[in-house]
Image 1 (tube, rainbow over the protein chains, first blue to last red):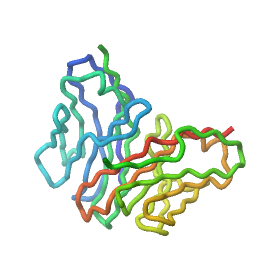
Image 2 (image 1 turned 90 degrees about the vertical axis):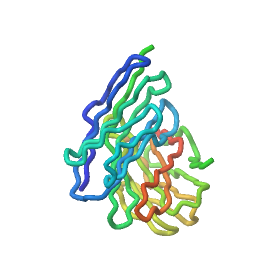
Image 3 (image 1 turned 135 degrees about the vertical axis):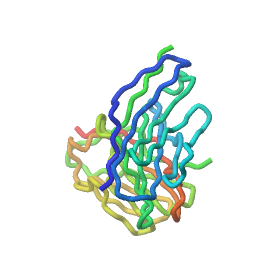
Image 4 (image 1 turned 120 degrees about the vertical axis):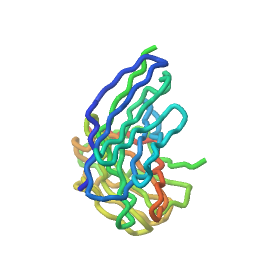
Length: 116
Length: 115
């Protein structure tokens, strides 16, 4: 079974600085998808960024980018120019491509604090 | 705008009560999910449904059942609530991707307290 590990339960960053959240996963599949979700305090979970395993190029969405290392099974999230609104729980998630399953496997999350 | 709604944001129930949590999506998605979120444990899948009247167990189905009579609605049922079911419950939906990297859309969550 696939597993997703987020080794940092909590992280903090100064406003305008850069922070990197770590995520590793375990799978025997060669094709799969990876996601970072954000859950602000008392608000809905939303997708931040996604990456297809067959793409070598790292995904980027404005201030958010990933460092995808397929061989190392690592998928870290970099937040540049951190803003107060980035404070949230961040979850890394994995989805396989076999069997048509849409199930996601989530990590335990990293709580990000942004200090003014 | 895509939308997943849940019937209650906060719910307080007594041990032994039958509890219904309702989730509705307006995106015509085939797949719907119920997760439980606990501090330090992340999101754990309880049940999911890939079509009307179809369901599959997730990682922690014990003590729960589900119902999907209509495509847009997915209900989570606690037959006899217990204190260890006190948690945040999240509903999500997604279309069948056929290999594409479709995202799951989440509801606002129901914080259930069982006394």
